[in-house]
Structures are given as C-alpha cells and as structure tokens.
Length: 222
Image (cartoon, rainbow, N blue to C red):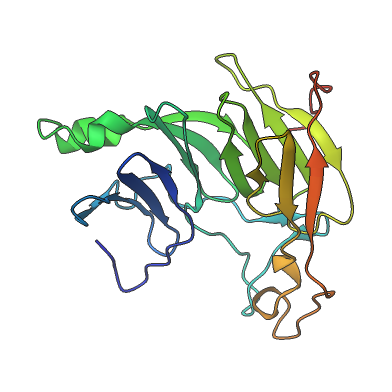
C-alpha cells in the first residue's frame, strides 16, 4: 500500500478499521485491524492532493528551497457512527467519503473516484477531531484559533478561541469532562520551514481549553 514517497501523518480508527492518509503521495490507506490487510485507495485523487500553499499568521510557508510549501492529505477524522471519513490536505477543501465504499467489492474505479464529496473550504489546518456527539473541532494554523462545527448541511464554524500562544495548533484531543487539549506544535519554527535555522521556543506546550456550554459566535473570514 505504500509508495517510495509515502509519509503517513494521520490516523482515524472506528471498530476494526483504520484510515491513514498518505501525505507524501496523495492517497488513503485502509487497514483491516483484524487481518492486518492494507489497501490503497484514491491514489492521487484531486481532493487528497495539495493545491494551495500552507498559510500562517506570517504568510505563506516556504520549504528550504524557497518554494511555497504544500502537503497532500494528512488531516483525517471518522464520524462517531463510522459511516463517514473526513479528509483533506492541511490547506485545502475538506472532503467527505462514505466508508462503506471501501469494503464493497462491486464498486468500480469510476464510482470510487466519484465517491468523494468536496464539503467545505477550511483555513490551513494543523489537525481536526470529532467528538462523540458529532461536533467537529479544527485547529486553524492561519490565525492560531480553535474552531468548532456541529449540525447542518453546510458547515458554519464557530470560533472558540484565538490566542498567539497557539503557534501551529495540531490535532486536538478530547476528554469526557468537556475539555479540549491542543498542542502548540510550532512546526513553522522547525528547521524544515526556517531554512535550517530552527526557532522553536521551548517548552513545547499542550493547552487545555474548557469547552463552552452554549454556541459561540460564528467565525468570520473562512
């Protein structure tokens, strides 16, 4: 299921199935955890390939060679009922895929390609997760924010917090008592993004956010 350029940079698990995006060579790898069998799907599908550069509060991120940096799909989450996968490049459209298509032997290659629904244009994300009630949480790298979305056909995200300490907020984690844990990963300060001169401010910190009990204002400018 892997390619020479493969970089496995995310995972979503439901039941005995694991879904792993390949951010080095755009694709989605589906692993049967019971048998250990892996299959590669949607190889180089436009929804999984990077088309826009990563943006931070200081502008576009560039690689060591000076080129604008764009990464294939690495953001992934699975719905609580296991019926949907949400996946996207860090800076791209969020797409939704029905998981049943990965286990249906009658699905044609054309039907597989058409199974991906482009869902929402997000800001540059450092990670996303879905709560048991279906609420989706996004880490917005562009503004150092945490966004939430729940319900409705068209996503209208709510901004929970914007904080300058959230330098490249990564995938958030949830506990069972109404808290969100967000690592400030500072990837934009690592050598890969700073021409070999890392500028990480130690220690790297995980922040704890108490989730609101009522809906916050809708986010603007996304």
